[in-house]
Image (cartoon, rainbow over all chains, first blue to last red; front, side, top):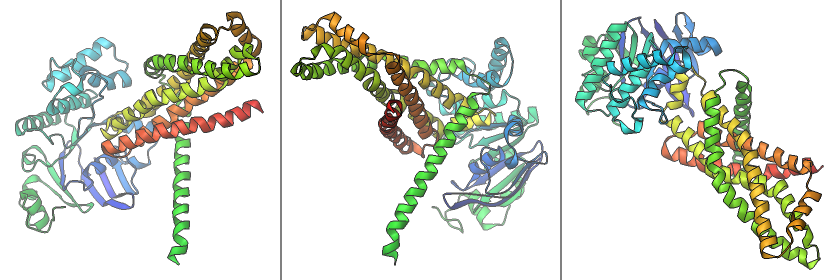
Amino acid sequence: MIEVVDLHKGFNGQEVLRGINLKVEEGVTLALIGGSGRGKSVLLKHIMGLLKPDKGKILLENKDVSKLRGRELRRLKEKFGIVFQGGALFDSLTVFENVAFPLREKTRLKSSQIQEKVLEELARVGLTGSENKNPAEISGGMRKRVALARCLVMNPEIILFDEPTTGLDPLIGKAIHKMIRSCQKRLNITAIIVTHEIPAIFPLVDRVAMLHNGRILAEDTPEKIQKSKDPIIHQFIHGELEGPLSVQ
Amino acid sequence: MNLIFTPFKIIGGSAHRFIRELGRMGLFLAESFFLMVFPPYLLNRVVKQINFIGVKTILVIVLTGAFTGMVLALQIYTTLVRFGAEAKLGSVVALSLIKELGPVISALMVTGRAGSALTAEIGIMRISEQIDAIDAMALNPYKYLIIPNLLAAIISLPLLNAIFVVVGVFGGYSVGVGLMGLSSGTYFGGIRDFVDASEILEGLYKSLSFGVLIAWISCYKGYFTGYGAEGVSRATTQAVVLSSVMILIWDYFMTSILIG
């Protein structure tokens, strides 16, 4: 279980997270929704230990992620996989080399075993035949799928998705959502998906949490979130211009 | 009251930012050298970066070296002739190149060609979250991005300096012997009489330290770049300007230490 307790974080004197409290049970897929630039990605990076909080704790297996250093922090990071917003593929490597990178650097597998695993993972995300292409030569949707393959190849226990379908057409977006769900079911991983794909994301997740003003405004099942009477949640998920939320 | 304190506030704020930045830069270099000791030793990445920093700069070094030697010989010859000391041309050209111009100009060339590219590449990796991706894989980005560049620059700079000096000496030879009519034996004899190992070591120490300076500043500016294309562009400009200025400042202090 991942537990975030009273998490605070600011940048250049501006407080982005103002006391986040959130629990994600094992094997659960949680969608994290909220306005743009409100700290959703910042929260993900804290959970993974990429950022240190100003105050508060992130508990994983009863250990505070923010207090871990060195080998312990590396061991924790090995449990995670993350799919970044733009894919974060290495420009200087091909699609194959990108997916093979963590295997080459983190395992002692033979190159034949690495090749087998990489090709298998690329086939799973529908990218057979694209192994020798450079990231610059493939589309946004393909880049996200390569990033997903690179993440899955290490068999993580927890996957964090930072806007995995932003900027993609609805069909590719849907295909990626389906891929995420099937991976989650097949491997029984815990997943947190930062997304703006509302309501498309609701059938795919077990829980939804809404981030507003640096805090978790609500965390519940997708059905209950959709029926919420809270004017902020109602306005946000229905995309209405009139209401307590202002467009900045 | 505000009018009195505002200048102090501005000066104090700037000094504080400068000292903080200097401290961060110091820690960045110290951490890089500390991590260099521990595995994994990514030798293939070091070789790749030697190719990028060193091999790909050879043409620029040969061109600048040749013309620096030629112009140096032209200027010095016209001065030496006034004192009837034109026989000393070879030694003066060689000493100027070995002790000063070789290390400094080759370092400035590497800064312009490779240092700026390093900052831009690392900066783009930062803003496109590629550095975060390395970190997320429980790997240390310093091992992949900083240490190979630092080692490659330390290895490449003395070699580039050596090429610069040799080409420069032959550039001087082409002017002194080919144009001015000095004998070949006089030109090279002067070099043999006046240049010894201590002079060559002085140039070597300088180019080694310039290698550290260039990689340190370029990698630091890229690693901690600002947001977006503007941030990377600003970091690249800062890296080139700061490296160039620091090379000249450090050269003065190195020279005064080595001479003293």
